[in-house]
Image (cartoon, rainbow, N blue to C red):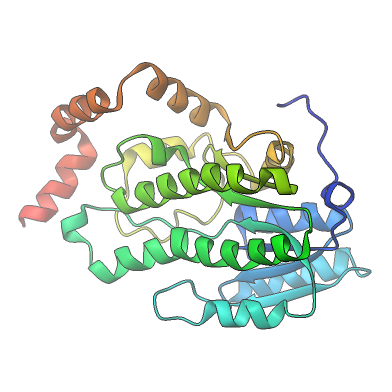
Length: 285
């Protein structure tokens, strides 16, 4: 995969517009710049904050010949985010969709407010389904080619205590991508989910509970600008793509160890882990 040329998505699909969720920072921002470098106009969907404003200004400055639309939304239950996205794209054909928005909730499930868990599901999974359903329906109706890309995680393929909801949403997204890939591949629509290794971004800045294993993994994090080329190489070639050494090693571990056995071993070992001890003390206090 690494030696495959980075495809020109504008030329490959005859596209003029792309849409990226979680576009204000991190991987989403890097994707926007990569798409713009290929001559594509971009709809930036993200929280209505300074990150979104600053990213849009940077894009407009670097690519004045292109058009950038911003849609400030919150992917939470009860929010009218699809109404805003539909309105912003009603007069354009969006053929390239990158479902990248997501966040992580840490801590024991029983110690986490239910509303926060449901918001995690909405942002990481439900919103991706809504966005994908709307745009893929238009692509099929208009007989247009295009691609749908999901930012998922190998956390969806291993038991992930202290971040159970995050891992569950990522398992859903990867399964959704594979199933959808089969449904629309013959129509010229490519669907894939990518599983990046840790990325240096603000993704972990606002977690409620620090996790030592997560912080250790962050030491090997790569800049988000290193991801778009690998993500682009995935499109049209595979349904799932593990990117980076941590993702590869995790995948290899799950390949050789049955999931039930892995879960059983983890359940026995977990109470002895520093993270578990800290969170369990808080649970009992």
